[in-house]
Length: 219
Image (cartoon, rainbow, N blue to C red; front, side):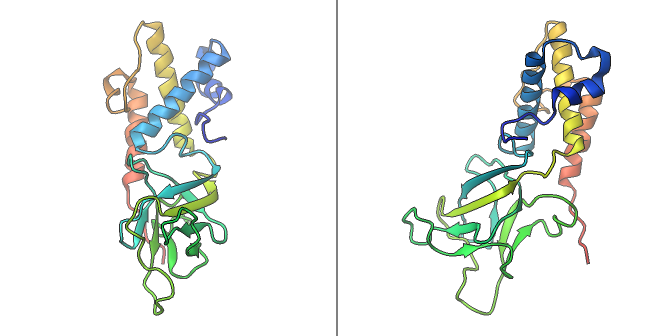
């Protein structure tokens, strides 16, 4: 799916809802898209973060060893891999990003959480490890927008099934609410809690819990 796509398609909606999936495709597509963006806001991530896409993003360093992949609005970005030299630094503050070029093949650069790849999950941060030479950086520059990450593998390789299921349920709740004259217009799923059907609420809390569990260390 493209960056701005919904996390579920009309066909996936019909597979799960069955005979109740009536109405024009354009309306269904719009409701699935609105449900997807509601999920993004609730997870604190940028629009379309779960979709696999290619992009170049810039981030602010804080002078520490860990670069959290978040923008100034606090929205999270998900990274699966970077190509050779895909992480570049503007160490001279010229806007040219002609300083160091790094990637995960460098022994002192790794993605976090640890073992994310082994568990089929994306990275949410990049860490610079200490090393015996001073020729390479061990701290991200404490300036705005001086780290650029280019990748063809942002997001998940495929939207997690749990996110597809939740998107479908949120869209279905919206459609049911419209039939009753209500609307599901809330900034986050937690704010919309009392308006959701019990199954959607259960799916959301289960999905939310799955994202806060620490990844186990793989020996």
